[in-house]
Image 1 (spheres, one colour):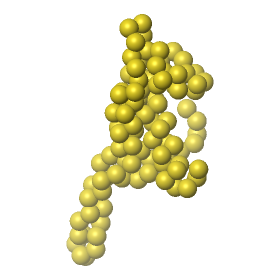
Image 2 (cartoon, helix red, strand yellow):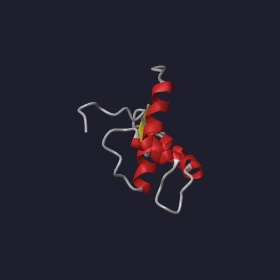
Image 3 (cartoon, one colour):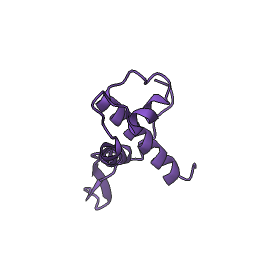
Image 4 (cartoon, helix red, strand yellow):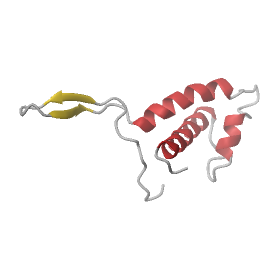
Length: 98
């Protein structure tokens, strides 16, 4: 793990309520945008993962294996890792970094 702080994009579904001074105040945070993007990416990844009878030689496994240190992951770990890779990429594009 690096010392870099992960950009989570803030709350995906914040709840705003009026505080005692009739000012809007965020009272519920729920999922982060990063978690929401990863969940959506995971659903798509499962559809395109092409699981095979001899393990997980798939497109998703290929992507995860490109990342140093992740070649020993099993199927669900690969899908979760790649989903967050995609979520991080979506956040970078959203913020104009790419």
